[in-house]
Length: 396
Image (cartoon, rainbow, N blue to C red; front, side, top):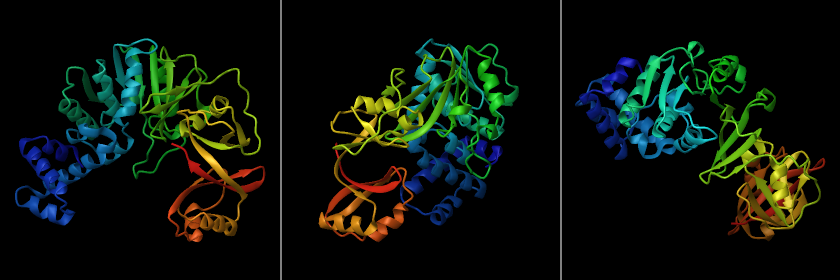
C-alpha cells in the first residue's frame, strides 16, 4: 500500500469503504464477491485498500483486542507490533518502576503499538520511524484512540535520532526482512545493534525489544533481560537499562498473571536423577531466562537429564512457572512398544511433547494409528544417551 492510498482511507469516502469492507467480510463474503460488491460504489484502488485493511483488522484482534476495530495496520507493521497485554506490562514499568519517567522517545515506533501503551499511562511520547507510510499509520492510530495530546509521530532515521530532552528511550528494531523472513542475529537488526545500544545509553533509562532467542552472550552486562510469555507461549524479550534495572540480571514474566521469577544466587545447577512421581515442564520464558534451577528448587525436584529442561519430583507442588504431569509409565523409546502400551490403555488421542528428542512428532502421530476413546500425554526426551517415552496425565 502506498501512502496516498492509505490517506484515502482516512477521508469520509475511505471510512465508508472500510466500513463496507468490514461488513462484507463479517458476512462471510469471499474476496471475489466482496470486491465485486464494493466496486459498485468505490474505485478499484479504494476497494483494494479497504479490503486489505479490513482483513488486517481481523488478524489484529488477537494482538489488540477491541482496539483493532479502530486501528490501522500494514502487514509488516502488524507482524512486528507488540500485543497490547505485553505493551501494557512494559508501559507500567516505564511509568512506575523502579523510577517513573515523564517522557519517552520511541525510536522505531512502527504502527504505534508500544507508543499507544506508553501514552495511555500518561507519558508524553515522541515516536519516530523512517518509513512515511508507517508513520502515517501510527499517526492515524494515535488519533483513532484519542491520544493526540500525549503522542506525536515524525519521519526520522532512528540512527540519527537524538534522545536529549527525553527521560527514557524505547527501541524496537526491525527483526524481519522485506520479504517477511525473520532476522535472528541482532547485528542484522535495523537499526544496527550498536546503534540501538548507543541510543539507550544516552538517556536516564531505556528498553530494547528483542527476539526471545537472543544469545545471552550478546546481552550487555549492565542490562536486565526479561523474557515474557503469554499463556505459555514465549512472545518476546526486553532489555532494560539505566534506572529501569532492578538488580536482577534475568527475569521471566508470565502473562496474563504478571507472575515474575528472578535468579536465586544461593542456587547452583540443579541435581539430576531418575524419574519421580511427577514431571514438570517449565514455561518457555523460564527456560530462556536460564531459571530452571529456581523452579526445580521450588518443587523439590531434579532434572531427568542435566542437558534437558524437564524437572521431576515426588511431590506435587503448585507453581505458575511450570506445568505438572503425573508420570504413569517410563519406557525406552520404541514405536512398537509405545503403540502397544497406548492401545492397551485405550488411548486414541495423544498430546506429544518433546525436548532433547529427534523424533518427528507428526510422523509419530501417523505411525501410532490409535483409535481408543481415552487421551494421554507422551513426553519424548532423553536420559543420558538413551531416548525415552514418558506416559503422563495432565494435572489441572
